[in-house]
Image 1 (cartoon, one colour):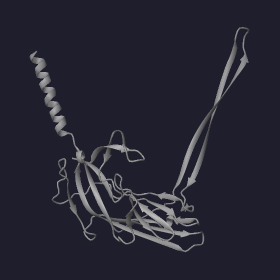
Image 2 (cartoon, one colour):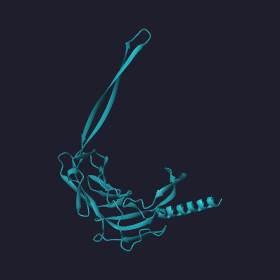
Image 3 (spheres, helix red, strand yellow):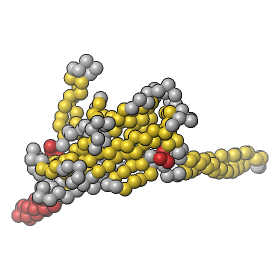
Length: 262
């Protein structure tokens, strides 16, 4: 009995140390603002740049931030987006959307053939053979994205921030309900990013450039318990239905997040 009690005590101590040594999950939420609020504004839940021919929309909310963009063709002509003249800009560095990549997909197929041969008087002899053929299909990355009239296409290649950013004087392990952070101006922001998009209306149309830049105006560190809430889904009439589901907070188009452990 004494040995059993000692065993239980040892297991309890081991469990305590394992629990205390395990790392907890935290989130760093990035709030952004457009560098030019006159040309890019929040509209219908997205950061939106609209001109006479098209609408360029952004929704950054994703793990590490989604730097991609949607192009909606407002015109009655085809819009051609030249990826060779489209760039993702991050803290003064430009990254190409068009990289001239080529992909090869290989597919193998095995065919079996069997036949019977006459043996002795009591049994036939069966034999079989198989052959394998391999077919490779190559595809090349398209340089131009074609957007039909009154349609939308999505272009994506990069994330904005891959890791959490250490903030001077800000606790990186906040308690639930005690988020901590820092604010920045466009000049002091640690993350300035955007897209330079080139398109033309019609095959021989004049090139149009969309240059949208954003900066991180605030970063907050959030406890995992403060990052989610339980809500009921709503039907088309706005009436709550079904069981509660987990929803991530801070989920707006002008924010994004990264997770980290401490």
